[in-house]
Each structure stands twice: as structure tokens, then as C-alpha cells.
Amino acid sequence: MNPTVGALQATFGNAIGRASDMRDGWISVTVRADRLKDVMTWLRDHPEHHYDYLVDVTAVEYRDRERPLEVVYLLRSLARKADLRVKVELDPRGELAVDSVTPLWAGANWLEREVYDMFGVVFAGHPDLRRILMWETYAEGYPLRKDFPLRGRFSRAEQVRQALNVNPEANYSMEELSIAEAYDELPADMRERLRRGDRGKVRESE
Amino acid sequence: MSKRTVELELATPGVDAQGQPTRVPLVADEPDLGGEHLLINLGPQHPATHGVLRLVVELDGETVVRVIPHVGYLHSGFEKLGEYRHYNQIIPLTDRTDYLSPMANNVGFALAAERLMGIEITPRCTVLRVIACEMSRIISHMVWLGTTAIDLGAFTPFLWAFQQRERIYNLQEMWTGARLTTSLTRVGGLMADIPDGFVEGLREFTRTFPDTLDEIDRVLTRNAIWAGRTQGIGVLTAEEATNYSLSGPMLRASGVPWDMRKDQPYLGYETYDFEVPVGEHGDVYDRFLVRLEECYQSNKILIQALDRLPDGPINVADPRVILPPKSRAMSDMEAMIFHFKQVMEGVKAPVGEAYVGIENPKGELGNYLVSDGTAKPVRWRIRPPAFINLASISKMSEGHLLSDLIAINASVDIVMGEVDR
Image (tube, rainbow over all chains, first blue to last red; front, top):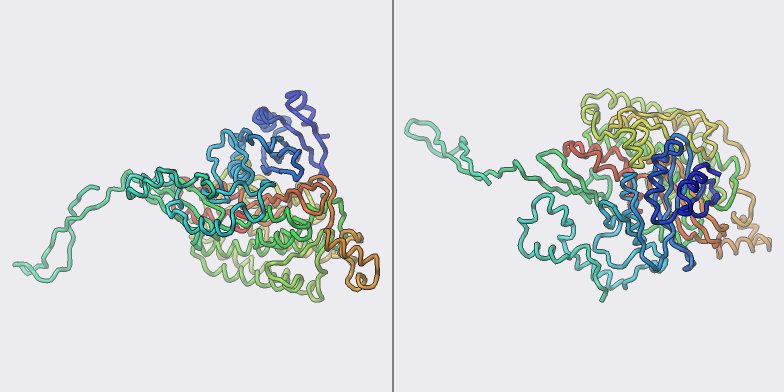
């Protein structure tokens, strides 16, 4: 068993859940969601363990509704050539929220955005939590959730209608327009539409 | 807006009393751009963004202040689709992720599925998969070299590189019947063994391919324009590259000697004699050098793989995993049952999960499979190297010129099929 697991249990006590050997030779450790940030900081900065490389952040929702949704972090220590899988279990029927690890690893930025986009997990403290693969006005929910049908929630007719009614200004985000100080020079009606929040808002389906 | 009087010599009809051409003072509004930043939009339809990548760039004069990338224009939901497919049915989806190295993607997925199911592949299959991976590395790096050279104004290396890529594509077509959608692997083996003449064709390729690399080396490496456009551009230190989770040539160019083939060997890579090139400056130039040297090393691995290619079966002898030959399925009751069960129910994987990362041309391609005991994965996650490498583009291009942004973007070696999946 990876020595990190014992050290983790000694340091964080009951915040560390079960640890198991996986088929691929990795060790998987479950961590309580509220202590994730501390555990990850410790794992990155402790000189003996020093997991300096974040391989991946993803989430798994099981077909079995009773099982929790897992946010999975794959960590690696490049110097020690050791791997560790850290999991946080969340109740898929409750609020999906966990601390962001982007302040620790810059590489987590887009990975967490993708998990948010696909599963709706909110990463507290993320600098820029927006959808990344789906467009910002996407209103059908979170595609990789198990209750999301393969063809989407809306009918094909509704999807086409929405695609045709896309606000062309929605190609730029408010942030992008404001950094160029272009916002004040926009036509009044466009400014109004942007202020009303035409983009980024989840539209109620009709 | 400030008003300035600009005196211009205008070609006007007529002359004044002295016989000189008349000068007309021109009063023009000239925008004062001193404090204003310009917002420009690059892509998604732009040849230098290598696919449907869109960059919104904030410029101060010609200097990049900020880059906001937009991805997702090619999002196809492969991971969601995979949850509705049998393991072998997912393999065609992997072709379409990193479509510049389809065979390596096939291998990556098959390795993850086999790790999940605990299958040991045959020696011949192992060597053939190494050949597939290294062929993919060469074609992917050739596309990278060619397109990057074009982005920076050198047209000739593009033609040389694409000629060599074409030769690999011909071999790939010979083997799999397809140039792009190869679907080479199956769980537990391969779709087909190599055909007659393949080994000779690949030997001929490995004999002459280094000449092209030498030519490209000669025309670019010590080229003043090339060096001037790439040296010191888009620098990432080793700490930054690690912190940004970069992988592959991007990570190694920054001086981190991490290569999955050496550090977490798969397919018996530890038994091949090759070296991992590592850069020291972490700029675009070093990434070029690293990729160029990797092509030489891949060629070396191909030669060794051809030399040791053993005879024997390409598939494991497990009728639950590998389809029996059609002739047997038509004549033998047991074979027919296995055939039926595999086609109708698929190959069942035990409960559990497996992550396998392989060294793809772009970086570490990870396949993370979670199974609940059925024939379809609960979750199929691709760790996309190009997506993660691309995330560092904002950091790399800050403070550089707009034209350097093109070089930096090219140096990431993105392929949008994989970034957006």
C-alpha cells in the first residue's frame, strides 16, 4: 500500500475515508469534501509526498442512483514516479459543490470548468467557472449526468429553434467587451440586451 | 479623439502662381489609441488556429495583453456516447478524437479496456501496437512541422513533411483499409494482422525517412528567420509546465524529462533502445527541436520493432473476448454461441476502474474506464493532452506580439477533435 495513505490517515484522521487498490495499480483514497483543499495542499507541499503534477480531474456518476457522484483527482509525483487517486463523494440529489484546486495547480482550471460544464459540480474559489465545451447559453442541463438523455433534453425542433434565435452578440462575453472598453460604444439596444443578461442565463424551457 | 493637422503633399490638379504644385492642408481626425486596448477575434474559421479554435485577443498596440480561448465548436460528446456502446464499439470513436494519430488512440483505449478486464495481449500484438504508436507519432509530428512552418512563413518543409506523412498513410491504409478512421485495435488484440509487403514497405520508409528529417533540420534549425520567430517565444519554466499539467513535447521542452514510455512503461517500451529529448528553454524553438528529435527516435523504435516482430497469433485465445472466425461460427455450435453473445451482449468487464496513460504524440493520453460489471462502461473519460496543453496559451502569450501568438498557438500542437471531443 502506498505510504501516503497511512500518512494521510495519521494527519487528517476521519476526513480520510476508505483506501483501495485499483485494477490498474493505483491507490484510491476517499476524502471528505470539506477537507479536500487541506488534503490537496498537504499532498502537494509535503516534502516526502510532493504530488506536484495533476494528471486529471473528472467526475463519475454511477447508473445506480444510490451511489454517490465522485469527483476524481489523479495526482502524480514526477520525482517519485508515484500516482494517487483522490476521490470526493457527493450526493447527486443534493448540491454538488467542492473546493477548487486551481489555486494549487493551474492545470485544474479548464479541467474543473469541464466537470462543471458536464456534471454541474460547482468548484468554490475557481477564478472563472464558465461552461467550456458547451456554449454559455446552453440551457438543457449537464450532459454527462445519468438523467440526461443521449439526444438532449429538448426536442429537435426546440433545439433548432434555439439555434436559429441565437443572439449574435452572444459571441462575446460581457467580460470580453468590457476589457476593450467597447461596452460604452455599443448601440443602445445591444447594450440593453446584454445588460438584461441574454447570455449565460438558463432559459426556462417552453 | 484628438484633432491634429496633418500636412500632406497631395497630387492636386493645377499649380500655384509660382508654378509649384498646390499644397492642400488636410485636417483629419486621428484616433488617439494611446490608452485604448483593441479587442480582436481570431477564429473559429482561421487557418492559423489549426481547426475551430477561437481566440479573443486583447491588444495594446501590437502587444497581447490577454487571450481568452473559446473551445467546444467541435464538441461531439464522445464520452457520453461511450456510455451507450460496448467496449469494442467505442474504438471507432477514438479514431475521431485525435484524428492526426488515430492508431495511437486505438491502442490507448484498448490498453485501458484490457487493464480493466485483466487481459494479457500476445507478443506479436504488443510489437504491432508499438509500430502503430510510433507510426502515429511520426505522422502527427509531420503535420505539426508542416503546419507550423507554414504559419511562420516557410512553405517548403510543409511539402517535405506531408510527402513523408503520405507514405505512412499508404502503409496505414494497407494495414487497416483506412487512412484516417483506422479502428485498428480490438479489446484483446487487433482488427487485422499486417498484410504481405507491409514489413518491406515500412523498412523502406525507415531507411529513407531520416533523410527528410535531415533536410528539414538543415533548412530550419539554423535558419535565422525561424530562430528569430521562435526563440524566447512562449517560454514556460519547468515549474510552470508542471503546474499547468502539460504533457508530451510541451512538458519536455521545458526541461521536465517525463515520458510515459520511459517512466511508466507499457507495451514493453522499456526493452527498446531510444532516448527522450528534453529542452532547456521551454520556448517554441525547443518544442520544435524536441519534436524533430522524437521523429528520429520513433524511426529508431520502428526499426527495432520490425527486427524483433515475432510470429504467432495477434489475438488472445479467449473466445469470450475475441470473435471466433466466421467459418467456425457457421459450423461449430459453441463458436456460434460465443459469436452471438459477443455481438449481442458485448464483452463484459468486471466491476472496477482503470486508468491507463500512454505517450501520444500530443502528450499523455489517458483513458479512464469505470465499469459496473456490464458490457458498457459507466464512464469513459479521455484525458485529452491537447486540451490541457492548450489551457496554458493565455499564460504563454501574455506580453508577446500578435504574430508571436500564432507561433505559440502552433507550438502547442492542438487538434480540435481531441480538445473538444
